[in-house]
Image (cartoon, rainbow, N blue to C red; front, side, top):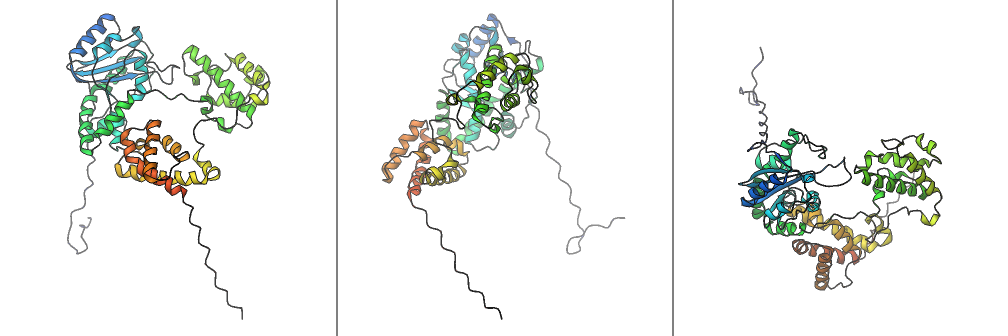
Amino acid sequence: MDEAATDDKGTDVEPAETPEPPPPAPLLVLRDGLTDIVDTAEGLAEACAALAAATGPVAIDAERASGYRYSARAYLIQLRREGAGTWLIDPIAFDDLAPLQEALAGTEWILHAATQDLVCLREVGLVPTALFDTELAGRLLGYPRVGLATLVETLLGQRMRKEHSAADWSTRPLPRPWLEYAALDVEVLTELREHMVDELEKAGKAEWARQEFEHLLGFEPAIRQEAWRRTSGVHRLRGRRSLAAAKALWEARDEIAARRDVTPGRIIPDSALVAAATALPTDRAALLQTQGFHGRGAERYSRTWAEVLDAVRKMSEDELPTRTPRTDGPPHPRTWADRDPVADRRFKAARSSMLTLAEDLGLPVENLLSPDYVRRAMWEPPATREPAQLADELREQLRAYGARDWQVQLVTGALTGAVLIGDREPEPEPAPAPQPESAPEQ
């Protein structure tokens, strides 16, 4: 028989019980059931009438076919508003959605990660005049994970299904389980917004959020310069002619993908581009025998790939791309110590101050101020070193980049200090202390 457990004084004690794990959060379900997808003019008119007569903000989401299609168009739009319920709109069935835009006039939109959806919504004529972004609000509030499912579980205590997040939404007809999944994405956005509005007010960050959301209304996706350089594995290429081959093959693949409206990786993968650019085969047969050159379109478009490589072989040295991308911004900070030690000291002081400030404010440093703005300001700061004038000119410089007023007010002091610190000559390292002479051997 086991002996009873005792404490350090010999007194009998009850064995500690293993704590029960907390019960899992309940699964989020549709309150009103699943409605039919709207793909007729009559259905759209009914949806618009219901949404226009409803009250409060409207929750909106869009599903694209990322990973399947070249375009970023919306293949399903979900809307939910108090008093109207949830509506699922098939934008492919309509020339435009002007009636829906009119029905939502003056209404605040609630989106999660608005920058992912604003462009495809604008493409079908849907443009907000006011919005609330729950992902961005989560960042400003300092939540470490700001995915919709995580925020819903953290703030509302419910789990969301995510099994169809990578589905091909260009599929027709859309399966019912996919539609249920899509409808759940707007089911609790209004409730989530209410929680976050209260938190932003209590944290003193409501005005920060207002300015951020207003800034999002004019969002335009960045145009990538020399996008071919983002090809996976291109950094391993040696020689400018191999780089030229990767660039030319990437451009040919991109043209085919755009014409067929499929994602470029489904023509041939990046690894195949790099394999061909490395080997530089001299004809179609050699290309198809190149190790690593594969993909659905490898043989189908082999004549195109071979012609591209032949054109690259005939390029003059002046036509070949440079090893590093051309940019109108400052160089990469890792080169600053050699190119401009003063700028390097400025940047390191700024980076340290910004990290500390962001931690004190409880938000990611990239949301406190764009890292690109910090680099630009520290590479080419105002000429003056009179502190008050320097601060004023830095404020104007940051605003010209696109910084919001709340950001400018918070970071100007730190960046002004970093500029002044950078101008100081670093303290010389103390000379090593003399070592005592060793005693002579006996």
